[in-house]
Length: 333
Image 1: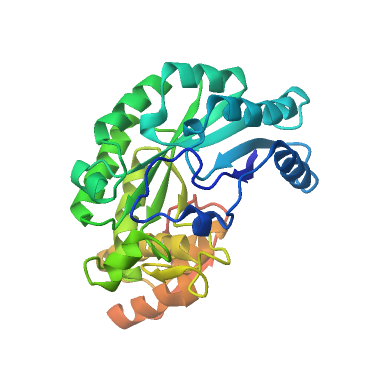
Image 2: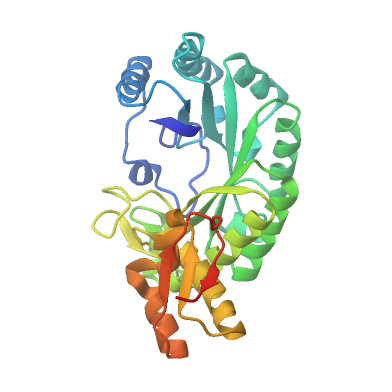
């Protein structure tokens, strides 16, 4: 069953801090708040294009910190979405918020209106990195929020960032391990981008912040993705969604931006697997699941080209229905 989100963006509302990396108006592509009528119009527009059966639909309040806005406004927004649950047109509500804006009172309100999923912007579990990012919360706040949320029948997602100011590969991997220990239902990984209008842009312009290159970020995210997958934690996104703003021609000043970033990451995982098989016994034909073919071949067939350069053999990668996703089988023609 496929899951669909109907996104409602509330840029910067409810958030008391200006994180050094953040410009929600640029990231969300919206600089105005939603009214009840706007929410209805957005939901109706999306429902008109979504399938009516064999799917799971959530209205998702993204951007800002939903549980940081006034209680009255939360109830106003939630009541609109809740009516669509009662009418059987959607199945739940998803909200994105901060770890320090979670409490028993807040969760009771969310449950009352049918919230089914909460995403917490963790970003890092290293307190020094959080302080440099001006997050305004600590790793303890994350642990406390997760503990409280686990008392309720709510799916939990945690978002982490890589390449933040003061961050390192080692710190990101430690954050990954600490997130795994919290056992979320899913995770998002966001490599840090330098966006126009942020404090990070100023630090980048003065040379005080050096962003990761695409290759550096891909290599790190590859390790993170493997760790989460090994622990049966679904990674639903790697990198921000490409939009008119989140692009090289938009508001991205610097950093590891690539339209197919996740494909690069998953391609690197397949490249490592191919190298392991070639080291074990050189071969020229490999079989993968048809849905994984583009990942195994790599972006612009880079895996095939790199294997040829490294081993002097031009390999073929072919689809085979009997191969499970994430696996490779050697084959002789």
